Amino acid sequence: MALKRGLSGRNSGNVSCYSIVVLVFCSFLAPLIFFVGRGVYTSTSIDNNDFSTTTSKQVSSFVKEKILAKSNTNNAEGNKWTQIAANVRTEISRGKQDDLVDDDHSQFHTPAILARRQLRERRHEKRAAALVKQDDEVTVKLENAALERSKSVDSAVLGKYSIWRKENENENTDSKVHLMRDQMIMARVYISIATMKKNPGLAQELQKQLKESQRALGEAMYDADLTRSAHEKIKSMDQVLSKAKEQLYDCNLVTGKLRAILQSADEQVRSLKRQSTFLSQLAAKTIPNGIHCLSMRLAIDYYLLPPEKRKFPRSENLENPSLFHYALFSDNVLAASVVVNSTIMNAKEPAKHVFHLVTDKLNFGAMNMWFLLNPPGKATIHVENVDEFKWLNSSYCPVLRQLESAAMKEYYFKGSHSTTLSAGSSNLKYRNPKYLSMLNHLRFYLPQIYPKLDKILFLDDDIVVQKDLTGLWSVNLHEKVNGAVETCGESFHRFDKYLNFSNPHIAKNFDPNACGWAYGMNIFDLKEWKKRDITGIYHKWQNMNEDRVLWKLGTLPPGLMTFYGLTHPLDKSWHVLGLGYSPSIDGSEIENAAVIHYNGNMKPWLELAMTKYKSYWTKYIKFDHPYIRACKLGE
Image (cartoon, rainbow, N blue to C red; front, top):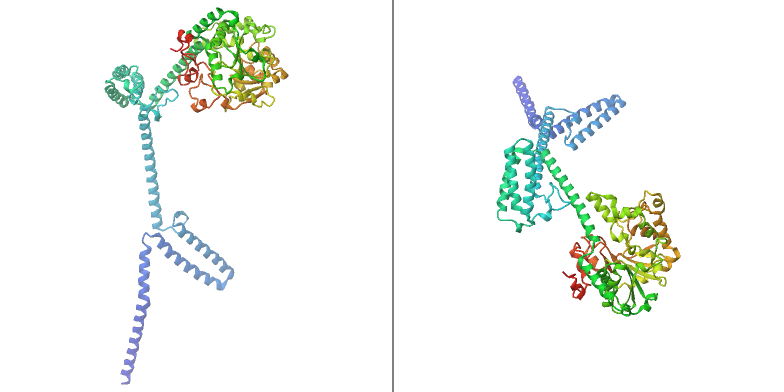
């Protein structure tokens, strides 16, 4: 019984132990096995962050155990392992932050990491190949677009010829005319290439279509001028050009041919410019028939007058320095009348204005007769003959002496026997009568002509006065001699444009960047003039220029030299220039100007005058005047 109880008690004890083991297993080991198994499965997945996290935990635990074990035996060794642990934790933390951007810096290379690296490299290679392919496609598209834009070339607009640029202003304006011109240019290009590549059939087809387009275009400048067949010609030419492009297109050849056409057009433009210069200079030096007729009729009638009727009233005002005096030197009766009329019509007190006119022997009678018939209101006027100035002779005046020399006559009149158009246009410029007339050089002798005056306003005969000018007499010139409007801009109309700075006399005495100024409306202080001997300075430079080594021609260069440092700049609104050569002067600038100047070849009395500026001049002409009507100047 005792044995049974013993066995029975042992069995119950074993059962109790077994139950405890099962309980521990279920409570601790089973979950542990589950999570370990799950962790192993998860670590084999492609998620690199979970792998790194698990690995870092294991490494950290391992390192901590090693550190604790070693720290009990050797503190120095423990410190070493402490530093290693810190470094490991830093690297692991950095790897997490970078999100494994660069696997080469990772401390652990697993198959998953290597697989991702290879995948990423393949993606980079594929992307690079796609970009290269895309670049090639873009280049082809750009070339095709450029060829399409070449159809929009406006070959009629000078200075804007570009086969790669489309001018916006021509986008909707007469597009058919422009298109036909561009098609003809491309047809010429392909004809040349077809001939070069021995394709006579296509060359003949292009040539035939080119002739038909030329006939359809004719002299048309606008779409409205085109014939009805023009639209069909455009379609036919487009088809032929498309065919030529498919068979012959070569970018280098087309570019070369277009460049050759452009160079040829440039040569033609330069040739036309030389012809235009020659003709404009020829026209500028001539006197229109109407003005010549007017001068002759007036002169005849003047010399038929008895001497007592040839005198002007109010001659006592001619030497009164308290009045407003003007100097005008001209051989053009009509031009002089506009200057005087415009000045008087815009003057607040016409009775205080005095006009001193000087002309040559040929026009002396006509100038007198005109102003005797058309007196300037209450203003005073006086006309003189330059040939009556006995003091103005070759012994006193260097210009007269030089004009009488054989070398100067050869230079001005024979023009070195030029036979070419370009040389002829250049020499014609020097043979302009204004450079040979003493009327053009009288401006350097104002105190000698008007010894009793203190100030005088010099006016050219190609100007129009639009406002009262009396304010100029009160301008403070600051002891300077000449009051004038400066003409220089950023880099033009400075002294180096007019003077020869390779000459040591010029280089030593003048600044090449000094600002130029304009003749045409100048207020001169004659007291300062005499004090500084301005005429003597002019004579010195004129004598040194006998062989034209300092300047070539004209009175502006010697004027710049003579009044160097003695010119006071006036406000630009007093004097606006360029109406004889520039088509782009602002209208408001002209309207606000006191004086407008038709300097240049396109004088307002010539047929080549710019129409947009002509009305400012013609408004001061009485076209119903019997003499003007008889000479047909209004037609």
